Length: 417
Image 1 (cartoon, rainbow, N blue to C red):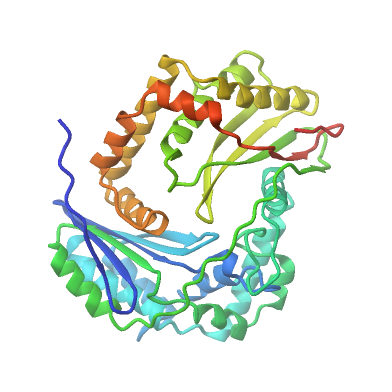
Image 2 (cartoon, rainbow, N blue to C red):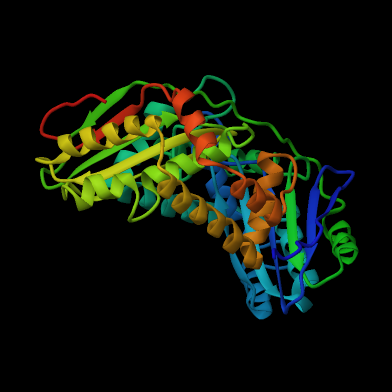
């Protein structure tokens, strides 16, 4: 018998902030604040601004200096996480229930009343520059960056778009100033932001606390950045001769589409563990690569498929051939045993993801930002368990993913997908 999920209390404040609150017995709380300003919103020529801002925010807020602010969080014993993604900046916090009000108050100061001291910014720019320079020593990071540039080209307009990493570019960092980064902070606001809270508090008490701490937050500027995918392109990068790396990108299925779950389950059959087709064909049967995977990715509200393999130059061509052959074979359908294995794994991930406080608040935020509504774990589980092999195979038979993008690094000669 499935456990009954607690109802989600949803409310949008007059300033545009959406609160999702659930009550769950236990000693702790977790909250997740998503602000719709990410690296894709970096101004043209100033790539890295959103990430610089996220670091700069911690250098004092409200009535507290940088040291006092960090000490206040440490005194509460809260765990912190989050970071800057392409589309949003997230702040994730968990701690003891008695400290929820204090934690909300601190983060309200952080995003509404930061000090942003100019003398700290140059240090942050230098640290970001070091991170980017380290990419040159990481073949997989080089491959990932080139794959993004190929798949999601920078657009003309106000924003830099999706082609660069969150840490920016060396040129963008060099051009950044206190004024230019503060201009990105001016986009921060309640409009389009989502705050998810799971705690032992009554949900109406949580709403009162959120209104008290975030109710006066200005609206800001919530604006989506267009995403355009260019399929069927190939790029080859030179390597050191010892390793070869492959990156593949296909168009996929959007989370809001009716085929999302059949697509997701089909990819689980293809590359979802040690019994998946890619693992068996590439590693177990042929020993072609030390790492090979194909999985779903969501960006700009769209679904994509990202593939990777790390091999040796002499075996990379065969690795690519096998991965492409398995991808094409998926359209011919899955067996009942494969279906059941992938379905059980999908159910398990949805169930266990909802068990932890931090996992649940992330799910709440993700659902609201992607779907505009909250799914209860029992609802998602029922949808997955209602799938049949016939439904999945019917989808796979008519699915047209199109030509992939291919980026290779360190191959002895050029190949095509």
